[in-house]
Image 1: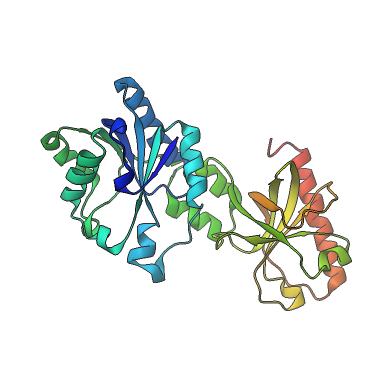
Image 2: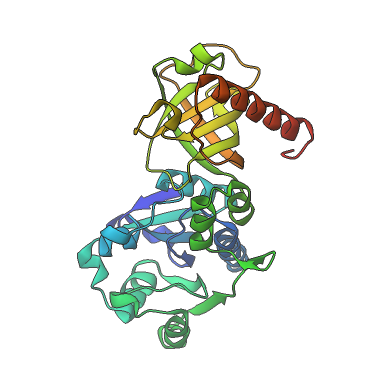
Length: 311
């Protein structure tokens, strides 16, 4: 998949195209369906499929004090777009100046003028243009006038819940990693460099990899079952996310205890895919109580993995 950054980088050989339009944070099931639709239509028309997205998230520019924590970094999102089969991704830098473009101008100048879109695929609730005036209804109205087809996809539901980035963030805030994975179609994941910590885990008999996350986490504090991967290796894991209240600390940590693994991974990048939460973060009266609980956490994780819950 070709990755194009900025409108000026868009090449003539990608015109005409079928465009999938959206922010696409996390590439959840509804995003995947939207991009798949664009890819299928492009193949039917024998033109390229192009994902048109924005970075950073418009909310972080327009309402930085209320902007949600991203579900996934841009590079992860691009990797998933490529996996779905898109021919190219156009990443438009979102700035205050760009936000002032009227919706009609965005459609005419960008989607038609720059991309040469024959078809534009959007979700039912996507908005664009100045003050978010652009809607699926407006896109549908403009399409015949400007010579393209607008395809608006209806909501996608999983067990009665509409799949959306907001619903996924809510699940993550509640620590419901399993529900988030169900809506995403894949586990919520983070990556970070393994750093040297205070060595408490080793002292307690449970040596952990202390991960410095590469971005703020959308996930609630607690103890999780996860799958850990690194260059050349993988392991099941029990991961503590939080502030280690038993030791009176106020620094946010991600600590991974890798099951059935021994070795030195310092300064390596560890990726953690969160499968489910065992329990919320807890403060214990002392170290012995903490050790007993950690033992129970590990036993619970082993039982889940051996029971085939996670494939």
